[in-house]
Image 1: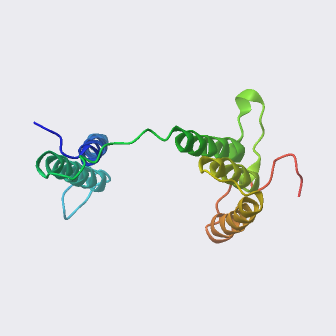
Image 2: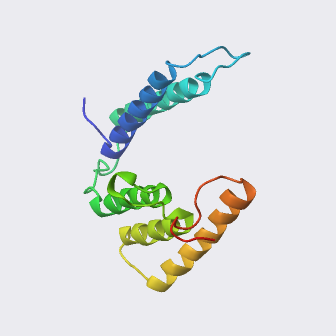
Length: 162
């Protein structure tokens, strides 16, 4: 069978893989039924729906003719590396890495590190804009997680005494 849209075909395969993984992961929990849902009910239904959606998209990619075959372009390594690195550094800054002696740096330092690292994923980098964004994100994160939700994690580096 001929693939008529590469983008849709591989997107559908990805949806099916994630849906099957969710459904399989949910099978370890109590499913229940529609009237008395268990903790695994929602992930199971979500996984099945996602797999069905992926199957429909994959089928469409094999049947519906497209203009240029919608080829997949080159893989965007730079954004992938910087976004994943930003999240890893944020986690390390928030909780620290005792195995290498890095103390928790707190929410504010973590947000600034996350913002500055992730901003390198794009084509342009403007220090002033990224700094303003980091300040806004830090203020909003502090307000949402510390003041409103009252989550208990360090805001500032542990070596700073308040």
